[in-house]
Picture 1 (cartoon, chains in turn brown, green):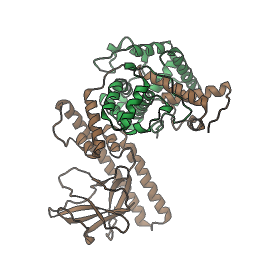
Picture 2 (cartoon, helix red, strand yellow):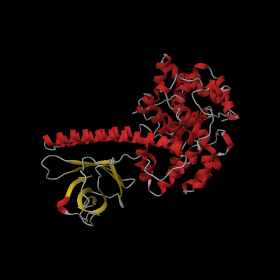
Picture 3 (spheres, rainbow over the protein chains, first blue to last red):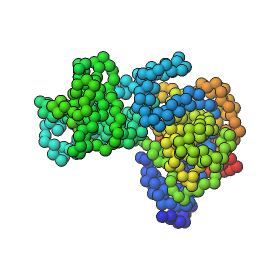
Picture 4 (cartoon, rainbow over the protein chains, first blue to last red):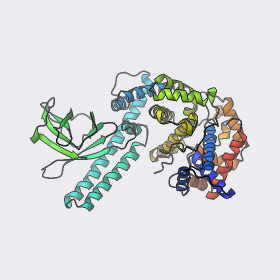
Length: 298
Length: 218
């Protein structure tokens, strides 16, 4: 609803201050004026709207003050490679290739090789940090839930820990180019972290995975999964209600590989749980019940 | 977390009107942009290429000036156009000009990168004191902060720089520290050792002055 009110000179100046600060990028969510700005934005007030538009336009002009220089040609090439990957739903592999160097020869080798090496190092560092965080937070979660029954309070604590981890992971992922690529893999959507627990184990054993409903993808962390001999493989399953488990894909960590995460596409994002089993090499159409080693509910 | 405008779009308030235009390189009209954007929303890559050709220079120059790292700027440029590709159908022409939206988006992404803790730490050593943007004019060749071979000042840029010269130094300083250095009002007040209220006033007056001087450009 539009609020066509009349402002005093002081009030008008206050609105101009808020709009100028917003347009220049210096009005942050922590600032006292932020909620006032949001309230005015939601009010539909004409003076506010016109002032804001004017300030934003003026700020846009400031952009032209920067020394003008063309973007490197490779930026365009990479942009459209990325867009094609988005359209084909292959963004995960696109980033894996782009940042890990696991791809066919790339033009302009000298320049790109340096970048790839740099990004590979960054990716390994970020992945290591993520892994350490995951293990640490999992340990916290496990120790608490092991000491007590999971009362409602403990569930809330565990949930809070997972949320905190999510924030940290999101923060880390946004920290630089390589980690931004990880964010882009999830389409700017914060994925759901799922803990797959090992039933009947003498001590708590858990496996972590990320589930992106929007991307219809799951990312299984290698964690402590041991390598299997060549006659066996791990297989991931999607479980929906009382339906038969749906095979998603197989993976077998190689003891010599540094791969820390396995990416799988889902036909449908509708799911209640995921499970990991050990199957014969090549995988199975239905899980071998006594070989289901981990189950995790959403 | 400091995410001022990460997810805050150009106001989606129906009361905002179109009409004002920023003259940019190539002097493309907003209506042409909107027609291209409509094609982009239909997943027409040629249309995106046209928009990219038109705006890559101003977007890249802006983000490069903010983050001062060519690789990072290149990534940000791509992020911006990926967002155009993915969000084209959500853009409402009644809510503002395309170029304002595009440059605000680019500015927000660059500023958020600048504010990220990891980036701050990495860039700290390479980042000198706050710049006076007016120094860029006429002496670009000696600007060692951006080791780029070509810095071409076009008419629009010259006019903007001239306008900035006409703004009182204290106001200009506040605008530049906010827009190009990504500082909050409180941070600017602290850096310049002046009261917060003074900074707010300087920003308001500086922006109004800029608009007044550039009346025929905006």
